[in-house]
Length: 184
Image 1: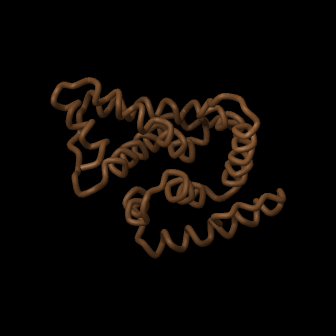
Image 2: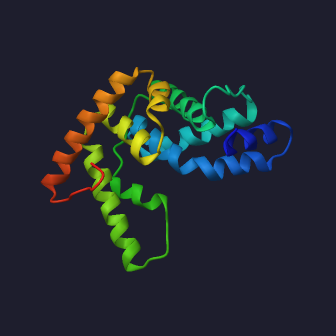
């Protein structure tokens, strides 16, 4: 059982600190992932909040065959899809807002790292939506291929093809900006 599952179990048993731990550990990554569905940071924040509210009020049963993070992201994805159906108007969000997700002390090294992240996020946002989702889940959130398959409801071959094409397209986008990312 991973940390998220134990925190959720503690919450279900009446320990509110379990939910606090879940929010602290998963909100930033979930926000970034759900932003790929909503294409609006404010809407993604609403979806993250709704996801945690669902956990707190409806207390869905955790499926222990999945990792907790995979289960939580699936709930988040379904929440975002429902949100988008209800709110068909979309706002365009600047990628500069993504850099505000993790405020760190302002030293030169951190600034350069953030600039690289912004460049990378901008390039990712230029890709097809399926490419964005698979790249965020696999490389930014660190999900395994099988977990990405479960979240996106695709088989391993489809995910492998998406990853291959997404990395190839991302590499091309980054080269246009004279940016070379070592892991691609």
